[in-house]
Amino acid sequence: MRETNDRRDKLAIAKATEAYRRGAISRRQMMKVLGAAGVALSASPRIGRAASRPNPTGLAALQASTPPAEVTQWLTDVGGQFSGTTIKVVSEETPPSRAIINLLPEQFEAVTGITVEWEVVPLDQVLQKVSVDAAGALGANDIYYFDQAWVGRFINDTFDPRELLETKPDLAYPNYAIDDFLEPLVTHIASYDGKMIGLPCDVPIFMYFYRQDIYDTMGLTPATTMQQYMDNAKAINDEMSAQGTYGTVGQMKSGHYSLECDMTAWLWSHGGSIFNADGQCVLNDEAAIVGLDYMRTLQTYMPSAVTTYDWGGQFTAIQQGQGGQVITWGEDFPGWDDPANSQVSGLMTPAPLPAAASLRTPEECGFEESPELGHQGGSTYCLSRYSKQADAAWVFLQWATSAETQAQASIIGGGASPMRQSTFDDPRVQAAAQVGAAGTTRHFPEMNNTIMNRMGTEPHLPQWPVIATDVIAVELGKLTAGQYASTQEGADEITRLVNEGAAD
Image (cartoon, rainbow, N blue to C red; front, side, top):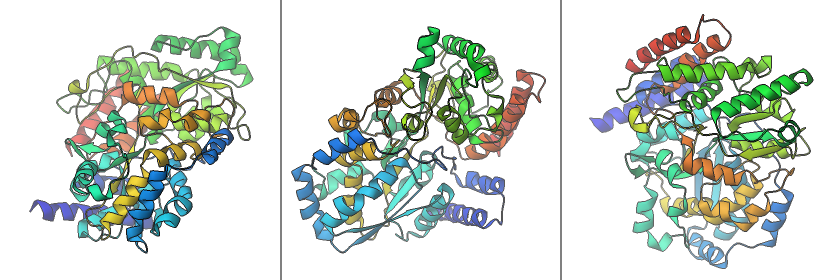
């Protein structure tokens, strides 16, 4: 019966996402079906944003190097066994996927004779396609792309890569080093109940950036506390807002998932959480009110138009010089450094995130929520159990996620986020860490630090997409617009609605 119900749920997911794509149902109706079927459809901060150009110095270092001889030999000997095979991949468009697609023709297909058909579609269509595939065990796609919120639903539809490395030693990539993947990414993005569903492939994550020129001129230092971050925002705003540069910039568009993402940073860093260990929403408890008040005060040091900015609007505002500092997605940084497109090229500087004023432990939260200032949203590449050419697909997946390919993707991806420690340590990647250069990697050391020590993860429950966007983001929009008499009144209403939604 469990398999029958599982298939029914996956077909329901596929039907709802297809109906939404055709305009037959609303987004809210689709989200309710997805929630009932046990998946969450997050909105990606990557959608609609162009990647920055590759770093010239990094490219020169890359072009001066050659792939290790043992890798070329492995692709020729092992991959060549499957020459003439076609494997299919479906994913959304991300900086890493763009980079790997660019590397494919010369470095993989030409050497192995394997053809890779990589279909790039919006995230809801990815979900629709993999749901149909998994429900019918069709094998229409060999490599799946999963948002972290889907791992529980599809954990039985993919191969555990650790098991593949053990059971298929004849296909093992040379020195693949699966333990080179950063442990927090494996645990929070690519695993469910202790089992790996696939391999981490991307992780947008909140980082701290400030305008070096403004800090130097005003005698400010990078904030080490949340209070100092607020003080810096106020000082910059008081001094420069009349010139169009504000204390900071948010992503506070009412009803948009970006607003909920912003909120979590201030909530978590002041000891709050969305749920407690009993699964009850606690967005109106004392710690949450402190965090929400912090957000509302910070808003007063932002452009008035901030309530219309999603993550794309925030990215552009910083690029145009509207903010003196910001805590936001690290993948934005290379675009700000691009001298061809940015007014702040070479001026933004990464810094360690300020220490949280207070921090609730994951054990005190519900639904695997893990509070920290470095809000993350990640994804995985997975090998389908229904693939009709699983061995060839496994060869491809190892190559695509190998240390060599990941290092190259980080250089040419213009915002690609490293998954492996070796990528951060690669001399070619480090050579691209130039100031004021397109596709810079100079924020990578702080990205590594944030992933390893400051990464925050949202709750994992089926109803989360509806709760996050259609409840929290909508009501937060009313709060930031001053439609509630007080923070407490708004928080009480959000809490009531969230608890109703979580109980559905």
